[in-house]
Length: 170
View 1 (tube, rainbow, N blue to C red):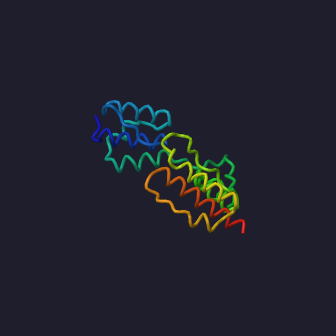
View 2 (cartoon, rainbow, N blue to C red):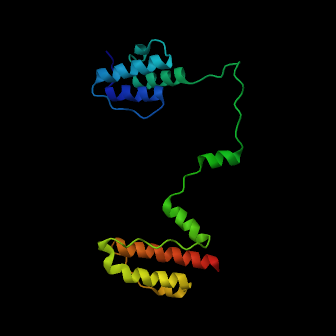
View 3 (cartoon, one colour):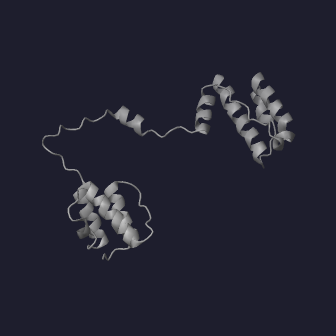
């Protein structure tokens, strides 16, 4: 039996498989998962790792699983910096995309107020749409909204995006 806890064995298994640790129902199931993963990875005597202290086992597994370049393999081709940057670029969210579109001068779509909870704000929504379509930046800035619930907050976001878009148009 191992001196390591089930959680530590799960962490070691995660190192082998290259993912996040998965919680085992028992220490025995953690050991079984570890041995199975180690055998699939081609590690010799996987039970040996379980007899070590955690830090020693972690180091030994990292060393055993790290790929060493073989002489018959061709060297890896590196990507140019621009491609690396594009590959690791953070995906743009909906709000960030809306801000970018507004900065490009595109008016945002007005918020959907068809639900009954938004009924009392429909007139303000229509007034904001009229101001935005007319290109009235002063009117949009002067439009008073107290953003204390979801409806006025949505109107406020819409108004601010409209102001950004209209100012970008010049």
